[in-house]
Image (cartoon, rainbow, N blue to C red; front, side):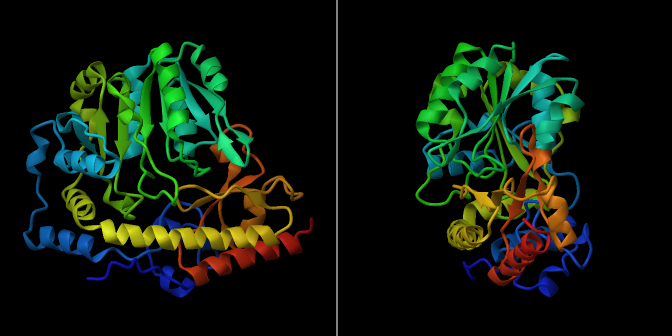
Length: 388
């Protein structure tokens, strides 16, 4: 069994995929937008899924009855092994969608009209979610200090003073790729304690951190912090399993756990194939994941080399993820994503990521090196042909 992730390395190979990444924009566009990797399914995941099918076990799973997730022990063990955090597995619940879980948590922890704190730029569903739920988004904008995206503690304090009860903290951060260090996380924790905030910690990119950076779970900062933190995560990003619709929620606050268990019809449950795939990934995928990290670091360097040669485009290399937050404000384009699309590359427009993000685009570099180079070449031609 190979521990080396195999990436699609041509448009023809990747274009046979039927997922939304390659199908939405048609055959003439190279997709570098949604956070899917162009990588083959790992053999250990494939074998686990086929084993379920060979047993013909696609009926109602036994975990529909007890509230604790079938992934609870595996999640707790993984957190302990990788980060030294020992979450209580009896507080773990399974869900089929992380975004749905975050929206439900906002609904359970805040009254209508309440402010919801969110560091920005941010993942578009989290930007849009508060308004859809009848809440009010309070962005905490990033600054650039010493070549890194940072969120000023005073900005958090000012936002918390609006009467907010909940903070959605994405770490590693999407789209900037920042990995918050212990000092930064402890500053956020101090503010959460002072303002009685519940913290929804989305840590789905935790296993895609580039060396020498290290992920630190927010709930691992101490018992007081853990008691007000709800951690949401999945194997979906690190092992490219988004279509398996399987995630976990660890509910630290007693009150939120009680509220969650009172509404089982709203929480959903992971499916049998997703559970099998996740268990296989967490139990057998460490070598594959380490090799993936090395390949993604190489792809990140490939983008960095292109940025250095492309006038009008800048970036701060991400410390995690396979997503690059490109600053295109040096180009005379009101909508850079639209211009790149005209030249055959689909990227995410910055304005989807919250206030002040216009002029940026998010680039997915999680593909094979030759295919990534073709994406970058098309983007380079767009810069030259559309003028500066």
